[in-house]
Length: 326
Ligand code: PAP
Image 1 (cartoon, helix red, strand yellow):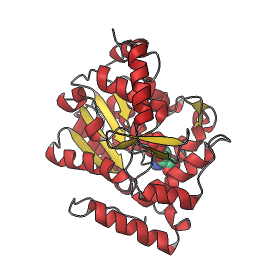
Image 2: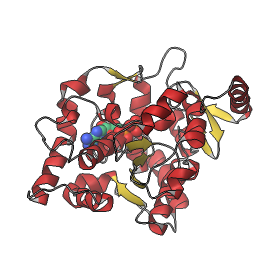
Image 3: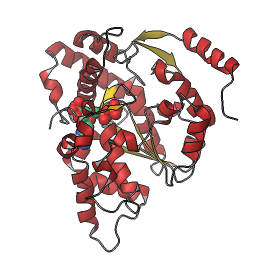
Image 4: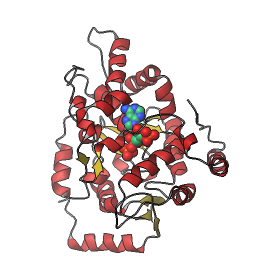
C-alpha cells in the first residue's frame, strides 16, 4: 500500500522543518535545501513520494527542465511527437483545447496529494507515458535512471531564464508572500536560490548525463530550438524513435508539429488565454514574450558582469555555453 502513514507524514514534516531554508522567488515564500537542491515546500511530500513510489516503464518519456527554460514548449512538442499515432490530425489536436501542463503532468506535484489514487492513475496511463519533471538528475527516482526510459532536457541561457522567472513569480505573488524586488531576486538567483536550483548544477547534471548516456538523455537548448526548430525537432523524433510518418513527407509533418507549438499560435489559443493551472497559476502567464535576449531590457552593467562571471565560473570546462542574443 503506497499511502504514507501518519507517522511517516510527521517524520517528513520534521525533516522539512530541520532543513536549511531561504526565501525564494516563488510562491510560498521559503525554499528548503533538500538533497542539494532548493525544494519548494508545496511539493516536498510529492518529491519524496515520487522517489519512493514511482515505477518507471522502459517506454516512458520524461521532459525535464529547470523552471522557465522552455518547459511548456517542450511539453507541447514532445506530446505531439509521442502521440502522433493517437492524434494524427493537426486541425483537431488536444493541444488546441488543452494547455500543455494539463496534458503532461509533473509527478512531483501530483503525488503531493491522494497518493494511492495518483499512483493508480499513473500506472493506468496510456503508453508510452509522457511525464515531466523539474527535479535535478541526481534526485530522480532510481527507477527512472536505471530503466530504459528516455529523458529530453531543455535549458535556456541563465539571463533570460532569470527574467522569465522574475516576471512569472511576481505575477503570482500574494499579500502573504510579496514578490522580491528585481535586485533582491537577482542576488538569490546568483546564489543558486530558486526552486529546483542551483540552476548551474541542474543543467550540468543533465548535461553530463547526456554525454555519458546519449541514448538516455537528449539535451536541448531553448535558443537552438528557436533558431533551427526543424533540425532539433528531427533530433527529438530520432531520439524517441517514434514513427511520425505513414507515407507522409517527414519534413512536412515536422513543420506541422513546430507550427502547432509555435509561441504566437499557443499564446493566441482561447484555452491558454484564461483559466488556471494547479488552482494558482493563470495559464496566460506561461506565455509572455518567448524571445531570446529580452534580458537586455532588465540588466544593469554590473548585473551583466556578475552573472557572466558566475556562468563562466560554474560552467567552465563543461563544454556547455549559451547564445545570449537572437
Ligand atoms: P515552467 O517551467 O513554469 O513551465 P516555462 O514554460 O519553462 O515555465 O517557461 C516559460 C517561458 O517559455 C516564457 O518565456 P518568457 O518569459 O521569456 O516569455 C514563455 O513565454 C516561453 N514559452 C512558452 N511557450 C513557448 C513556446 N511555445 N515557444 C517558445 N517559448 C515559449
